[in-house]
Image 1 (tube, rainbow, N blue to C red):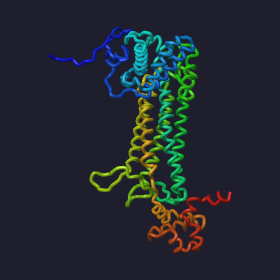
Image 2: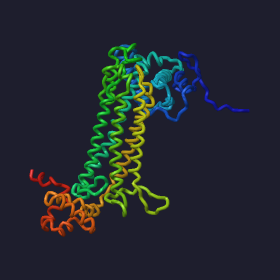
Image 3: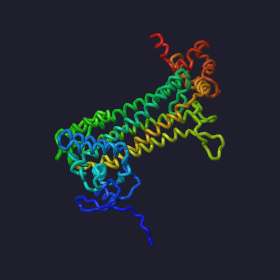
Image 4: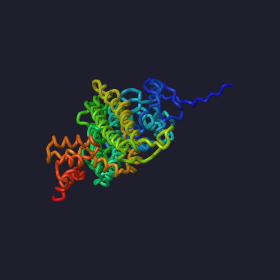
Length: 475
C-alpha cells in the first residue's frame, strides 16, 4: 500500500475561480497561482523588502482609518498583522520568487492574502473566508501593486542604507581616522604610478582613506534622501483612481514617523511609477561606494605585501593559514574578501541599471529583480565592510623602521633639491644615486651641490612630508 505524504489542502477562490492551497498556509489563491505559474526559484524576494511591505500596509491601514475609509476595529486588526510581517514573524508565508510579474503584483497580493487570512485566524474564522478582512477590499484599499511595490522598494532600500550600510561605513571611517591620528608623525615613502615618489606620513595616507569613506557616508545619505519620494497614492497608473486625495500624503507622514526617515509624496505620480531613475541613481552611488572600499582594501593589501620580499610597511592581522602547502604563509584574506564583495555589488548594480532601462509607458516592469539586485548590493557592501573593519583594520600595525628606511633612501628626495640647484642638477644627483646604489644625500654631497648643513635641512624626510607644518605652528 502506498502512503501519501502530501500536505492536505483547502480550496480558495479568486476572480479566476477555485485553487487548491496548502491548508495551513496564510497565502491564498492569487499567491498559489503565482507559485504554480512562475519558474521555481531559490531566489525569494529579500526578507527586508517583505518586512518593509508590512510597514507600508500598516501605514495604509492607519491612513484609511484616519480618512474614514475603514473602521477603526478593522484597521487595528490589519495593523496587528502587518506588525507581525514587519517583524519577520510570517516570513515563511511569503514564498513567491523574484522572477514573477514585473510589477510585483504577486508579492502585493501575497501580502494582502496573508493579512486577510491572519486576521481571520485571529478572529476565530476559517482561513480563506475573507472574514472580517478581504484581501482586496480592505488590505489593498486605496492601493495598487503599481504604487505599493515602488513605495516598498524605496522604503526598504532607504532602511537598508540607514540601518546596515551607513553604520558599517561609519565604523570603518572611525577606525581609519584613529590609525591616521596614531601614525601622524610616522614618515614613509609616497608612491605614484606604483613607483617611488616623495615622503608622506602613514597618517596622511590613512587620512585619505578616512576621507574616502566619509564621502561614501555622504553618498549613502544622498541615497536615503533621493529615495524619500514615494509613489503611494498614484494607484494603477499615477492618476490616483479609487483613492482619497490625501491618502499618499498621510501614508508618507505615518512612514516618516515609524522610520525616522523623511518620506514625502511624489511630486509627479506618473513619473514615480513609470520610471525607476532614482533606483538607477542609487546604483551609481553604490558603485562609487564599492569603488572607494576597493581602493582602501587594495592599498592596504599592497602595503602589507611581504613579509620579506614585498613593501611590508603594514602588518596585517593573521586570521588564518594562507596555504595548504607552504607552511607559515599568511595572506591578506580580509582585503580579498572585501574586494570580492565590491565586485559583487557592482555586478548587482549593473543589473539594476538594466532594470531601470526597462520602463515602458506607465510602468517599469522589473521591480522584483530591481529590489533584489539593490538589496544584494547593499548587503554585500555592508557585510564586507563590517568584517574588514573588525578583522583587518582594527588590528593593523605599522612597520615603522621599514617605512623610515624607504623614505630616507628614496630617489624622490631629489625633488627637494629643485628650488636650490635646479631640475637638471637634481636629476644628476638622482641618476648618480641610482647608479651607485647610494642615497640622494650622498650623491648630492659627491656632486657638491650644497654644503652639509644645507643638505641636512633640505633632504629631511619629515619636512618634505609636512612642508607647511612650520607655517601652521607659527599661525
